[in-house]
Image 1 (cartoon, helix red, strand yellow):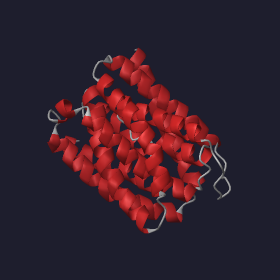
Image 2 (tube, rainbow, N blue to C red):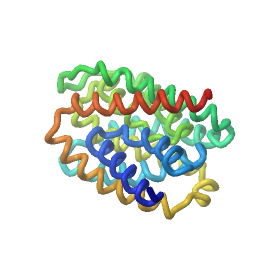
Image 3 (cartoon, rainbow, N blue to C red):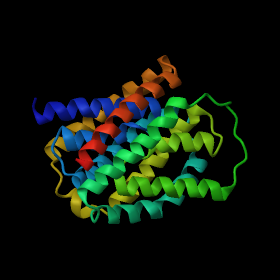
Image 4 (tube, rainbow, N blue to C red):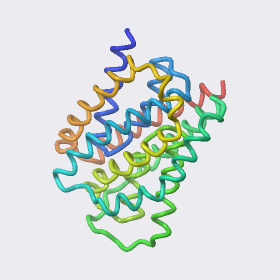
Length: 248
């Protein structure tokens, strides 16, 4: 199968997950780039940030039209992660490839397990300490910078469980957080962006954008918990595979 066709298929799947779940697709972008398209771990994390930034912006616009983006909360949450995202982006190039792959696998697995157990929450905001929200935002930014993921698979649970946001708003707001963090991390990776294979990354981004629109429509037809559990199982399988590959 050609690299172009693989990029189109992978991009469509990742965009679908981003549009439907408000995140999660990006965590599949890195393994897809490494194992399907032969990117190095460092190049894959950089390309993933490009894909995530563009796709999340597109998906966010659709959710914003429906009033599901909480701009003030999202920007405050994202602001706490800008510094850690930039620092993580600068450090990523100095981490050995095997260690980067292993770290990615551990984070993906840790994110998948709670998603399998998540129960629906009440659609009400609850008071939250600013320090707690800032800590969650900073941690998310660091993960984005180092591992090249948007962090939506962590942002949605954080917005729901830490800030008490209802699921529909958490999905839309997480896309705002993802976009800000991805752009901050990319700012420290300008040198690696120039060396990307744009003949592969370009079609990947295009397919992801189209997939994101379909993902939003899918979210309106299939229950959130069902989509979340399916994604969690796929994510867990990817995490196990990458961890085996890293330690082999």
